[in-house]
Image (cartoon, rainbow, N blue to C red; front, side, top):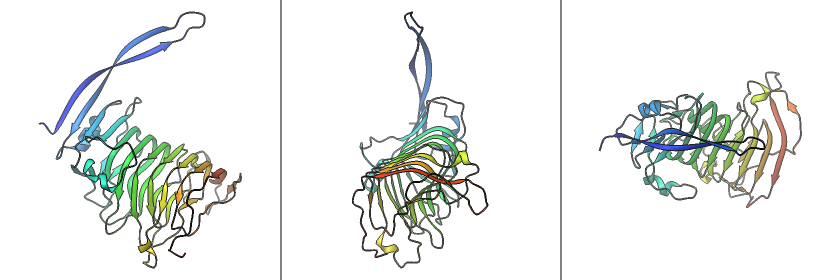
Length: 316
């Protein structure tokens, strides 16, 4: 079998034109979408470059793709999907599912996947290795739009990882994923962090484990007030920390932290092994940051239905 095999399928797209008082007119148009099988040893970046709106890239389960991959900007259109060739369980992914997933890894000290400026991509069922020395971000979203990360597996190696996902963009979604062993000596670490993207953000049904802030919004300057993270839903996630980090020279901080955000809903999450939950009473206003630019906000926070919130044996 060829390493990269493409099959064109014809999809029928129907558009309905509604005209007042008259019957609607249904217009039919043909659209083409490609399904590309990317096998072990194939050039994944070439497949990413060639993909067109609506295409599906199917990565061979168990294959390991090595490179500093980039999601290129494409013409406006339907989402491009990158998924595993295996049939995945309809639930949150975990380490036990690793053999069902293709793996992406970087051979150099840089992000494994850079989606800066990209729009309309979905990843479903992909495993990511950490950066070789734990530096920087594994996935970079910067000025990205409509990025959907579903059933992502990321467990950092022996050197930990400063950050799993940098999520600066619009319409950013993280669901049914497992991100663990995120830590960095001498630096704060986060499983997910965003500070310079307008949102909305949807973080639902994930396992999130990091030494400093498991999830943080803010922490650095937004470029302008309209880029402050906004319209945030954090629901049904499991936030925790490793006991081994206590006294190990790792900065252990909050499970969830808001430094700059608007319109946040937090509900039905499990928080454990916590030092403190850095949530202020909801208020409307701005905080003047260290550069004297009013680009940091905390406003309209809805926080309810806490599940399993307790102090664990970290004793912090």
